[in-house]
Length: 133
Image (cartoon, rainbow, N blue to C red; front, side):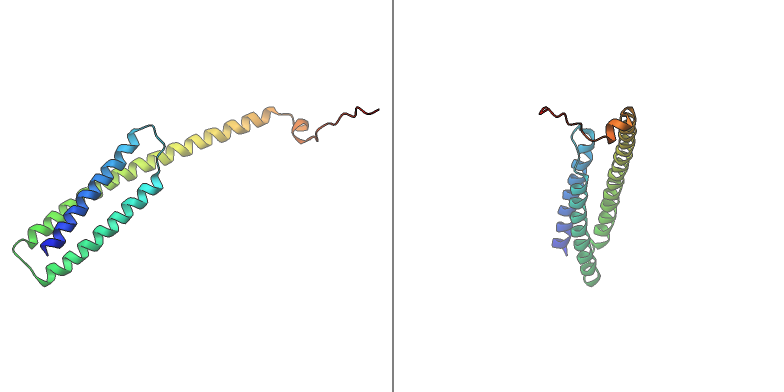
């Protein structure tokens, strides 16, 4: 059971660092790859959940003096990860809203530029001049 707990601790630490790194990418000027970051976090969370489930099964079978303290540690650590994940969700939502506003501005600009073109110029066939008379 101790071995399973150590694997969970390692996964928690890795996931915390991963989320921290992903949060830091929002402060830069680079274009984010939010979809890949989300997939990466989802894979890590799935691995964490599998390890936690294995640990809980083992804890039910062989309770030790440390079992309760281990479970409290897991609860606190997972709560911290969820708070960190909520911060990432907030950043992603803000980025999405900002991009939607920018897309609307671009669309309005495109319509405005299109309105300056005359209807005959945009729909007329190209003119051909014959020079063989």
